Length: 267
Image (tube, rainbow, N blue to C red; front, side):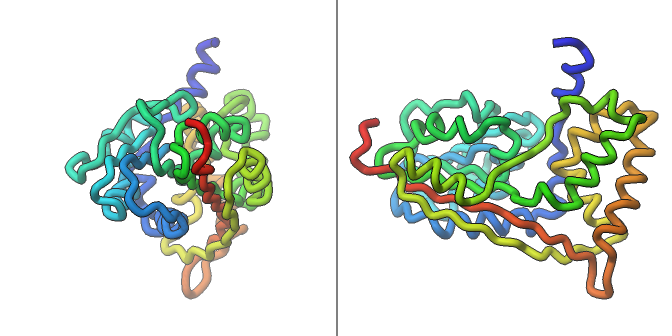
């Protein structure tokens, strides 16, 4: 890998920026968790746990379970509170394996960062014990201006030389995941919800996306070009998401999947 490609791949996450909209980002996790029917699991894992604010809810739901949060970002894991009875591990969810299959495996807004994650589903299911639960949520808004405007601006001749191969999230619709997991023998509950987040501030949609989907793009740009990209992106987002009397509305579609592994599956 050359130095330029390596620089593009080494983006970091900012826990404080991510948590600016913790309430809005956390609601899908709560609604996903409500559909998981596990009663007394012994081992629960959150893949892509981020700063652990939502992982703590797993411990509240199942206080007797051993709960582990896994994230590839050392910055995110360092921000997690270990005093809540949760163990945190820095690891890539593509290669992480538990010592024993777990009873509940949860992944919230993480799989969209893994290219080819449909092909990863069998190995993720292999981490779940017979009769266990695999639940995840991914954004489904990649055709919306919050993403399309960034991609269009990234193709500008000023910026494009620095942005080839930069990490960009993507995911599928609920039916695709249902069919793939059903084919693997799971009982599947899949659905979609579009939230209408009402955000405050001058550039709230920009503030939202720079904490997640746009961050790798901005980090890949040289310091002398980044301000121009940011300003043009801000202007475009203001036009796409105009501020109203009650705030700026950000429609956000999310895809939810809860799969029950067959109890008679041979572990």
